[in-house]
Each structure stands twice: as structure tokens, then as C-alpha cells.
Image 1 (spheres, helix red, strand yellow):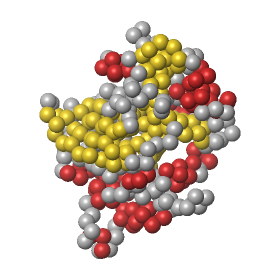
Image 2 (cartoon, one colour):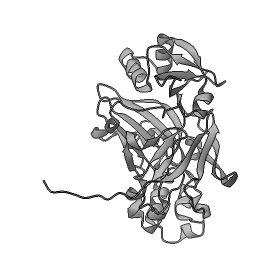
Image 3 (cartoon, one colour):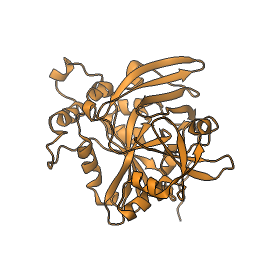
Image 4 (cartoon, one colour):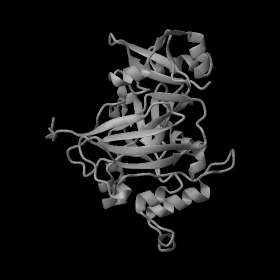
Length: 330
């Protein structure tokens, strides 16, 4: 039965790590308070995470849904020093993602291609190479360090200068770098990558700015290989009503890049193989409310759900207070 790891606080405020099964039942993992600690133990022992959980043993039962309702669930991965957790991602990776990004139609694709469409077409033609081969590299972006990840239920806070704050329902790969520089994939989390699409639309060279935003992950890391076909729903709640709702697809069967290709083109850089670091890498999406003309407001609640993940990703939108930044000469 597939395992999921959940990080949370108990009623007294002390951290604990729980292992959750397909039926939603969860128990404390003995001797480990964090996913990071368990992962490092598994790497040291040469075992899988599931074997590390079995070796540690399980303690008392944990009610994850109660903890979610009480705001006691943390993001499913973190690092003792947030600067050593890198949040990155890749775009134009899903079949249909170019339409979401540029509103292209089949007719427009016969016209001179935009740079975004060229990138998308490269992925269609070379994003899934044969085993042992290297495919075309995807679009890539940086979001921030561990400080940009909102906990389940916590606000996704948009900068005061942002022009938009919109959801992006995605899968995120979770990785820890071993002592010899080997990247180890722990599993996958459901997430909301969250971006400023109005800024990006002004000029695609503003993509880097549009991605320097918060993001959120669901409560659980699903261990092992991801399902090839992930089908879910993303919605925006405004007050007591659903403002917008749409199905979304993910997983390799719905992508123009293979997982192995995306991982290769991220971890080929030596600076991303620094021992002890954690990586959260978003895999892209093809579904955006922005493409349907939705303008979000503070207080709107984003919700992303998809099997086989057992808990949804839910976060309200907030706007941070304006900050005055002064650069001083020393």
C-alpha cells in the first residue's frame, strides 16, 4: 500500500512526522520528527523511504484531517535552514500548456511562431527521448527558497506591487541531495505554483519576475513513482460560492516532456547537487483561471485536488503591505 509522509504539530505544539496509507489512516513515525531527517537516514542506510519507515516503526495514531482543520499541518518538506531549500519549476511541459500560456489555436500555430510556441514545439518533438538519451531542455524558472512555501491552509501572500495572483495546479517533485551529490527523489506533492500572469503577459522576458512569488504544497508527499495519468480539479472560492472550476491533467501521459528529462535538465547543474540541500521542483500545468479571464481578489480561496492525493491544497489569497526598500552604502 503506497505511503504518504505528513509533517505536523501535535496538540502541544511539538513536531512529528506521520506515515499515512491509502485509507487516510496515519501513525507517528518513531524517532523522526521531519521528512528531511527520515530521508537522510534512508540515504545513509541505502534503503527506500518506505523501508526507513518500517525500520523506525510506527507509534500512535494521528488524525491528519483534524490537524488540517486546526491549522497544525506543515508543508510536507522543509530544511533546518530555509536557504538550503530551492523552489524551482518548468513550464510549457504539458500537452495544451502552450494554449494556456499564449491562447494559441491550431490556426495560429500555422502563423509565425512566438518564442513560447517554439519552446513548446521543441518539447513536443524532443521532450521524451529514448532511455539513455538526452532530450531537449525545457523552460526553467526559480521561485525562491524554503521561505516561499505556504503551509496547508495558510495564505498565499502576493507582493503589493504584483499585477495578479493566480493559481497553477501542478505536481512537484521533492528531492534531497545525498552526501556524494546524488539527487534522491522522495516522491511527489500536489501543489499550487502561483504566479503573476499579468506581469508575464506584458512580455515573456518578465517570466522570471512573475515567478518570484509564494507557492503551496499539499499535506502529503506520495512516495514512489508517480502515476502516469493524474486527473484533478482546480477551483476558486469567493465567499460561499465557487467562482471558477475546471478539470486539469498531469502526469507523464499528459506531458510533452518525460520526468527523467525534466530531472536531468535541472540536476545537470553542479550547484543543484550540493550535499544536504532540498529541492522542490514544479512540473508545469496546462490549466489557468487567468486564461478564462478570471481576476482574483484578496480572500479568494484556491483549491486543488487530484487522486491519488488524499487531501486538497487549499490557500486563501492575501496581499502584503507595501514595503519601503532603501539601499544603504557602507
